[in-house]
Image: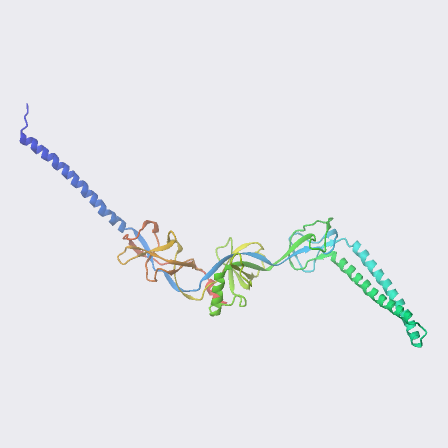
Length: 404
C-alpha cells in the first residue's frame, strides 16, 4: 500500500494551480496580440488617392424634350362630295401644290355652267337697260319725257348693273368650288396615310370637315424643351453681364442626344423662347431648330438637350462614383498627413461634359481624395495610399461652343 505524505499532496495542488494560471495568462496574451494585429492588418489596406481635377471650364445644363415638325397641316376638303381619286402613296414625300385627292367634279361643273348662263342673262339685261336709258336721256332735255319715266329707266339700269356684279360673283364662286374639288398639298413634306378611301362621301367647308390626311415638314425640325424660372433668370443675367449670348436673338448653340446615343452629336440653334412663365408648372418653353436632311429625326421622338449654362470659371471635379451619401449629405473620403481617412462634406454641382462631377464646396485642389475601396474604409482608419490621376471622358462640346 502506497502512502502519500502531506507534503506530496500539497506540491501536487500547487502544480495544478500553477498550470491553470499559465493557461489563463496565455489566453489573455493571445487575445491582446490579436487585437494588436487587427489594426496592423487594417492599416495595410491599399487605397488609391488622387487630387481633384482643377481647370477652367464652362458648365452645361441638360433638359429633356421632344421633337416636333417645323410645319404640320391637317388636310381637309373645302367642299363636300364623292371622293373619286387618291393621288399619292402613303408615307411619301409630297410637294406644295401637288394634288392629293380629287372629289367628283361633275356637280361643280354643272353649277359653274349655270352661273355662267345667269351671267350671260344679266349681261343681256344690262345691255337692254343701257339702250332704254340712252333713248330717254335725250328726250329729257326737250321735255318730251316725264320725270317718272326717266327715273324708272335709270333705276332699271342701276339694277341691271348690280345684277351683273351678282352674276359675276356666282361665276367666281362656282369656279372656286370646282377648283376645291382637287385637294392639294398646302406644304411640302411627308404625307401620312389616306384616312378616307376612294368611294366615300366627304364633308367639307366647315370646322368639322372630314380629315383626309396630314402632312409634316421635318427638314428643318424643331426640338421643344422647358426650363425652370430660376434657369431663365440665370440665363438672362448671364446675357446682361456679357457672359453668354441672348437666347432670343443670338442663336445659342444647343447639342442634342437621342435615346440610343452616348454623346450629344446633333447640333442645333435656339431660335425661340416663350413670352411667359407657365402659371401651373413654373416653367418656360424654349425651342431649338436643326437640319434634318437625312430625315433621321421624326416628330414625337424624345431627346436630351445640352446648352451653355455658365461663364468660363475655375472648377474642381471628381468622379461621381467616389461620392458617398449619408441621408441628405454628400461626402468624400480624403487622406490626412498621417495616412488616416477623413470624411468631408461636399456641395455638388452638375456633371460636366467630361463625365466628372463639379464640386462647389467642401474640398480644395490640394486634398487627396480616395477613389477606390470606398465601402471598406471608415473615418480614422489608417490606410496604405498610392497616387493615381483622375481622367475624364473626352468631349469637344466646349471647343464647339467657343467656336460659335
